[in-house]
Each structure stands twice: as C-alpha cells, then as structure tokens.
Length: 395
Ligand SMILES: Cc1cc2nc3c(=O)[nH]c(=O)nc-3n(C[C@H](O)[C@H](O)[C@H](O)COP(=O)(O)OP(=O)(O)OC[C@H]3O[C@@H](n4cnc5c(N)ncnc54)[C@H](O)[C@@H]3O)c2cc1C
Image 1 (cartoon, helix red, strand yellow):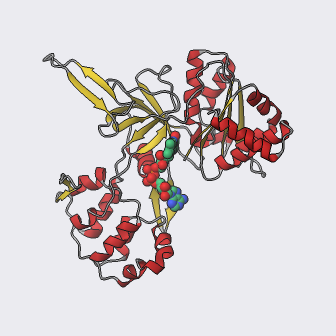
Image 2 (cartoon, rainbow, N blue to C red):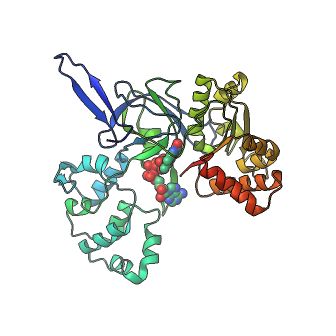
C-alpha cells in the first residue's frame, strides 16, 4: 500500500464495517463540483480550473502532490475506428493476460490507449497485413523513418494506411497498451478546501498529418465532463516538491501557464497557516488580457499579504517576447537577497524550454549578484538543489 492510500471506514445500515482503500489500482470516483475556463474569450488557449470532491474517499494530500486521473478516449474517435474497421462494439474482447473481458466498445473507451503508436504496435501489426509499405517501414535499417512515422499519428492512421487487414478486433486490441493515468499538480490546499481537490488543466489540441488531434485527458476534462460527473482519481505523493517545514522560510515560485497550479496550492496553504515567510510568484503566459490565470485570486492574496510579490511576463503583448526568466533577471538583486536569506526556489511547468531558461537565469543571477565565477555560481545552485532548496516539477 502506498503512503497516500488510506483506509476509509464506512458504517452502512447493517452495521457491518466496510473498509475501502482508494489508490492507483482502485481509483476514487470524484464528483466534479465546478469546472471553469480560466482563459477569457479571444485566447489561443483553454485552461480549465476543475474542483473535485474527495468526500467519503478518505484521500488526503499536501501542497506539491499530484492527482492521477484515468481518462476515457473520445467517443468520436472510437466511432471512427469502429466504422473504419467495420468492428462490432458489442463483441467481447479479452483485455489482459488475466483473461478479463469487456465489450469492444467499452474496452476502446476505458481500457486501451488508441491515440499513440509505438514500435511494438507497428511491428506486430505488420504480421496482419501484406501491405508492402509497412513491411518496408519496420525493416531495421528504416528505424529513423519508423520513428518519424509514429510522431503525431495514432491507431486510426495506421489502420487506414496499411490495410487491407487480415486481423480480428481481438488481434488488433491485443497489440495495444493499457491507458496510463495522467498526472496533474494539485492546485488547492486541503486546509483551505477540506474534502476538495482542485486542478488546472491546459487543453491539448493540435493538428498533425491532416487531422485535428486532441489530448485524451485534458480535452475530456474540457469538453466531455461537467459538473455532477465523476472522474476516477488517486493521489500521487511528490517527495521532491514540497513546502519548507518552517512557515517562516521565504519561497520563490516560478510557474508560467499551468505550471502555476502547485503555487496556488502553496499560497493557499501559506494564507491559511499564516507564517512569517514571504512568498514571491513569477507567472507568465501569452496575453495579459486573456491568459492571466487566477489573476483576481492572486491580486487578493497580494492585498491581504499572503502573496508578498507577484511578477508577470506576457510573451505576446509586446514586440519583444518577455518570459518569466526575464522578470527574474529584472529583479536579480532582490532575488539573490532572498536566496541569501534562505529562500526556497521552485519551478513548475514546461520542461523542454522554460525550466532550462529559468535554471540558466538563476545561475546568471547568482553569478552577477554574488560576484562569483560561472563555476562558483553553478556550485551555489547545485548546493541549493542538494539542500532541497531548489525544487522542480517539470513535464
Ligand atoms: C508531474 C506532472 C504534473 C503535471 N501537471 C499538470 C498540470 O498541472 N496541468 C496540466 O495541464 N498538465 C499537467 N501535466 C501534464 C499532463 O499529465 C498531461 O500530460 C497533459 O494533460 C496531456 O494529457 P492528455 O491526455 O490531454 O494528452 P495525450 O493524449 O497524452 O496527448 C499528449 C501527447 O500528444 C502529443 N502532442 C502534443 N502536442 C503535439 C503537437 N503539437 N504535435 C504533435 N504531437 C503533439 C505528444 O506526444 C504528447 O505527449 C503534468 C504532468 C506531470 C508528469
């Protein structure tokens, strides 16, 4: 049992004690209490603030933890797949090695991942068709082409492109991976919202190979579930991302876009617990008018002192793109003074670019304001990481 798996003891009418443990293997059906789009009309983005009820689950969490959500595939996609292959959704298929079965339609909805391809799927699918192109694609010398092919394509693309198929629905679903849950940084403090958990979910939508694509979980959360519906969830502890033990320790938080989620939780927690420690948030997104997530809440927290400093960067409001790392550099002297006074430094959000740029900006600041060599500044930042005063939750 994981540390976050908790026993919930209920006393039903017969007075028999029923003990339920909710976890990744037995997710809790959390009711959606509220779902709102945090972006304003005209935005290029859709970021959902979703409030879920944990009532009766016994689940608990601390700021920094994540919530796992088991999504369902888009019914439109399943309809297309069934039509393409002329499959019967009521046909029973075996879904795993244990021999468990489900009607095909349900298996495609809840059990299998159908939106991503991997090498194993393409290679094994090739045995069910005589199509020369797929036989060519799986040759060892074509591994780069195979990798390129898989990018941005899904099961429907594969089945459309390489038929005719000499395979049953069972043959094809046996190639598929079980749908993994998606993790989301928890955006609320349990002390501020007992029995609730809040999420900040950016809808993933893009076009690839001539088709509009939708992220399974994020778009389910934005388009296909509403208040009163439930989502299967579990709490995933995060041992590498947590508030300092002392309420008197200052914290600096860098969280552009959905990266702001855990920092809403941190600030709410600090507001409830009322320590002496100062809090400084760097937030960024595309446009101030439409993409300033949680603007009113943060401004209120600034007014009442729970948020000591708020610096924002909107990259598409000016000719010169301004990002959170630029705001850090603009405030380098004060930021270094906070670090010298023992502040914790947190980064959450985009792993590919943002986290690297912020990391480099941090070293720049230490180098400049601490009058250090590059090497000394890097050592300073590495020491912060070792002391757990520099924590990242990037994805
Ligand atoms: C620890 C952690 C915390 C997280 N916290 C949050 C959070 O607070 N909020 C949040 O919104 N997300 C968060 N995420 C990300 C989240 O888990 C999901 O990955 C995200 O919501 C996408 O899931 P999905 O099911 O909607 O998309 P999927 O169906 O999983 O599709 C996403 C995939 O689509 C592909 N893709 C995406 N864009 C393109 C493109 N332009 N071209 C080609 N292919 C593309 C990529 O392969 C990508 O992996 C977190 C992730 C981790 C690991």
